[in-house]
Each structure stands twice: as structure tokens, then as C-alpha cells.
Amino acid sequence: MSSAAQPLPKGADAGPAPVPLLEPREGIPPVTATPEALAEVVAAFAAGRGPVAVDAERASGYRYGQRAYLVQLRREGAGTALVDPVGCPDLSALGEALQDTEWVLHAATQDLPCLRETGMRPTRLFDTELAGRLAGFARVGLGAMVENVLGRSLEKGHSAVDWSTRPLPEPWLRYAALDVELLVELRDALEEELDRQGKLGWAHQEFAAIAAAPPPAPRQDPWRRTSGMHKIRRRRQLAVVRELWNARDQVARRRDVSPGKVLTDAAIVEAALALPSGVPALAALPGYGHRMGRRQLEQWHAAIQRARALPESELPQPTLAPNGPPPPRAWADKDPVAAARLTAARAAVTARAEELDLPQENLLAPDTVRRLCWEPPAEPTAEGVARALRGYGAREWQIEQTAELLTTALAAIAQPG
Image (cartoon, rainbow, N blue to C red; front, side, top):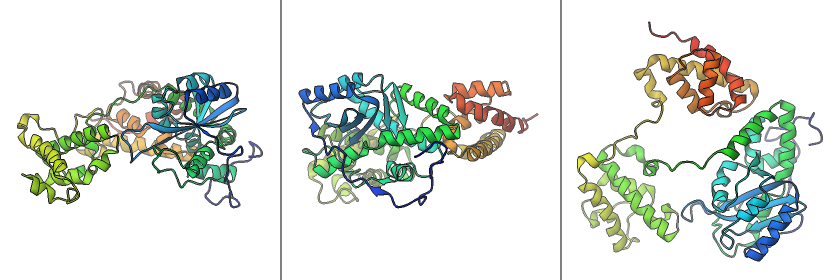
């Protein structure tokens, strides 16, 4: 971008055809996979200048968990590095060398958990995806942002490959290096655009919140996220889903493969619906066909039998105990006044988000709006609403933009006399 005074194009067809980015400017760097090579990378990046672009590749859909199988970095004065966390599982020295450096990531919350596992965690960051959302871009994927902002195009053909493959093919390494090639340039252009729009301070608050956030707590009852759960109606069937999910998870963890490659969600739901009484009946169900060995079938059948043998008192409840307000669809019956408050508050937040040209969920998290409307503050003033929003984790810029309008929206709904 030539000047901060010139708005960045935000449409899909805002300018000439993007110029393909085909090769890293210094070529494809060698993969760093030994302690000696890692020490050289640490020294080079510690001596580099300015922000450091960081990315990570996982093997989702192939391996168990979300660990990193390649970490890419680029910094002025250091060039690009491709680090193999399999050969170098402890990258804490690299993280320490960059501790006081701003890290530039795209969709930071996706990569930070796997980077944290290697010992890398930023104290300052710039998220180019989130910056794009705040700046009002309709498409915020890395490829779209690079095209719209920098006029270049990235090849995205290897994003879903098995990054646990060793050795990594050269085309994959080229793709990985190019992912950090322009990240700092994108950051600089977006910083100018956010400053032009008066949103740079907002972005800094968002980035600081991401950097300071603790690791997410383990998900409660993760088996409830099995695809197709809406078909399950009975508690005994829920128990089958739980037992099969847990058995599958143990096998997947032991074999280090994606759970879906062990047993599909669809197969788990089929067994829960059918409640087969024997191995032959199980083998006749979709997902348990002739390719599955007898030993595997017996393993899944044993899980089903465990669920069938549970006493009623130990069967899972249809839903988890609510942590917060009930689903909005139930508000009209449970608390019509709260439902009216939610409608008014949502309309107010949506209108302000449109004025500011940013997504509603970035102006204020939908869960925060729901909690505020379900249990409004005892003090129905802007100060009381601001305290409530702060307690739910809203940033100061969000409070400044929404506290007054939410106070007005809540006050407009008559309380029962």
C-alpha cells in the first residue's frame, strides 16, 4: 500500500489480477531437524530485526491430536526457517529468543495451542486474520488477504495434506515457506489501514487479550460433539455413543491416528440407534462391513454391551447442566421479558457493527450479549452495564462502543409489575 491515506480494496475484484508468488525469495530453506541446526536458527532469529512471521502445520485428519509437524518462521535479517518439531520437539530456546519480539500470525488462536506444546508462546502478537475482520474485509483467509491487500496470490493446494509425512516433499516445503513470505508485509499494510480507520487501538487490545489468554480448559463430555447426535433420543443410546467414542479415542491415541480413521462418527451413531445384540448384527450395520476384522468388531461390541449393562442411574443425561443461559430458542417460554431484551440488544449491537464496518461477533461476543440479557445488572445504568461486560471479558473498546446502546436497549423493555 502506497499510503495510509489510501483505503485498501476490500472486494474480491477490486483491482488487477494478482501476481502469483511462486518461489521464496531466498529459495526453499533446509528443514531444521537437529539440535545443532536449531541452535543456528535460534542465533539467527535472535539477531534478526523487526516482527517475526510464524506459522505451523498440523496433520488434522491423519494423526491423533493437533500437534505441530512443521513450524515456519521469517524475520528480517534472518530469512526463513522451516523447523521440524519431530526432530526438535523442544523449541523453548527459539521461543525465548523471540520473547520480546512481536509475532505475526494468521488466525493465531488456531496455531498457538500447538506452538505452546513445543515451548513457543508470544508475549506480543499481530493477528492478520483478526486485523482483516476489524478492518471490514469480507474474506479474511490468508490467500484472500494477500490478494486483496498486496496484489499477490499464494498457492493453497497443500493446506490439508498429511504433514506428519517424512521426508516432506519439496512442493509442500515451498508452500510452507511461502505462507510466511509476505506475512510481515501484510501486517504492515493492515496496521496502516486500521490506523486510518481509527481501529488500531482496538486491534492492540484484541491481540493483547489473545496473547494473555490461558490455555483453554478441557472440553466437558467431548463425545457429545459426535456428528449426527441430533438423531439420538434415548439415554441408553447416549451411553452407547459415549462408550464407543471413548473406546475409539483410546485406540486412536495408542495408534496416533485421527479418530475418524478408526471408526467414523456415522458408524457410532448407527450402532447407538440400532443397539445390536450381537457381533453379527453389528457387522451388518453401515461402517462395520466386511473390511472390519472380527477382533475390531468384538472391541466395538464390548463397548456397546457396557452401555447396555449400565443401570438407569448411570446413564448420561440428554444435555449437560447449563453453564450460563439456556438456548435462546427457549427464552420465550422460560422468560419472555429476557427474550425481548435479547431481541433489542441484538438489534442494537448489529446496527452499531454495521456502522463500524466489522462483524457483529467481533464487536461483542454473542455469548456476552446473551448473558447480559438473561441476568441484567441490578444497576441499570451505563456504568452497571459496563461492569457486567467487563466481568464477561469484553475489552475496553467493546465496552466503549456498546455499553450506552445496550443500556438503552435494556431500559426499553418493561419489567413485569
